Image (cartoon, rainbow, N blue to C red; front, side, top):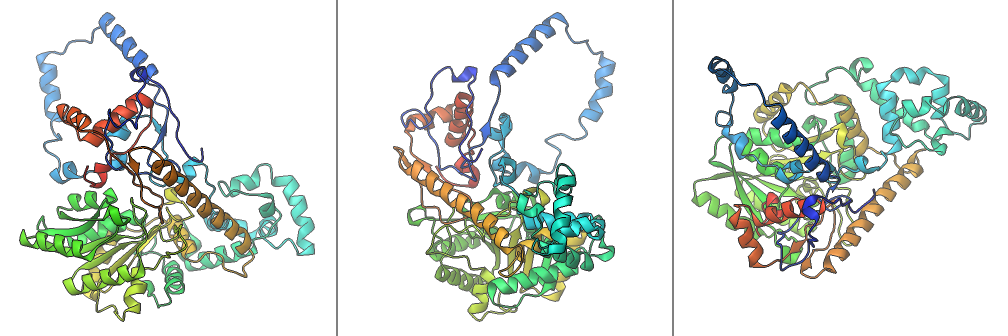
Length: 548
């Protein structure tokens, strides 16, 4: 399904409950995501569950469970109490992650959330998967047929070979070797010789050409070289491969930096509200304090320096040492793209206040408006004349987002600049605890930062795939935005980037009071009622820190 959601009926839905009737229910600002605005398509089969419950009840009455003796109970009790909720790390209990929280657990669902496009049918980028397939099975590079498959069809000698090979093997072998690669006839006819060349280049920098072996804990040096080259090309300023730490997606990199910076609950991290719950969860796990700064919904989720200063001063007055500022650009879950002048203000703020700038830039390819473009914070800082010694800056990137959507491959990196050699040694030590990130993710990260360029054989087909995905996301973002704003009592800011919308619904005090009677947050109460009544799953806005 490309967009929208699936509804199912349950016993709870015998009453017709409209989720948008203001006089009946409340919905705090919601998070809305790729293809279904944080609405998860689902089939709960609630009726089946009810039947199962009745059957279990009947069987239990006919066949009561065997009784336990006192000795049996005594024997079982010690092992049952070795680990309890009361005895586990309290920081785990404090950690919340709304996108996989109570409402989601309550439902049986097909996930349409967290920007997971391939689960909904988006094809991987062909060039990326071709290179990855050849790297994972390098013996294919020695086969004449595979060279024909990936070679230029205009070569008359290879053309006949391709035709015969296609007839013999297309039905099963190619689909297996390049599974999930969206192999089309133009690929079978052989247009991507540069995929072979890229795979060979990558294998040459992998020790032993072994993608199943451990790598350097910071990541394979040759792949870090490629990523640094891609950053330099993007920003127009040099990048050092020694500053690159390859990770299993951006999330482990965020955890690593929180582990490095947070010493106790007296250390705080400035985070945007609404925020991606990874940050609040990571801060809680590592025992720090989240210092919220609030994005201004009335100005399109603007980031105001006065708000940053206000929250910083409040935290310091409470004895909290604020260590870093998190900025998500483009915004998650709010979808705004920062203006260049605003970014300069943020860089100056961190410089003047002695803060580490943690730049979440995983949606850098997802820009949907003509008057905005992505600028990395490193580019902004360098253009202002700040060097490594002036500003500690950590930039996060992932292969899960953008147009690539390789969520399950778990690839990403952080670029760490402005830290002393002694601190960098400690960062490397943290990275080495996990030995290394997975090699497929490392390869994809190098490809994402060095895709085919104009003049490369695969560029035209690559660009068609890329622009098709991005234009589809832009169309759906606009459609959802218009749909929300056409509803009574619903407002939604313009979507500039990322994969998300965050609409606001206003409902009466009566619904809020009903939630309080069952000790639930109003938006969580609404989300649970909506799920039971319609089979539609939404994540409460409060899960992202947003006030009602």
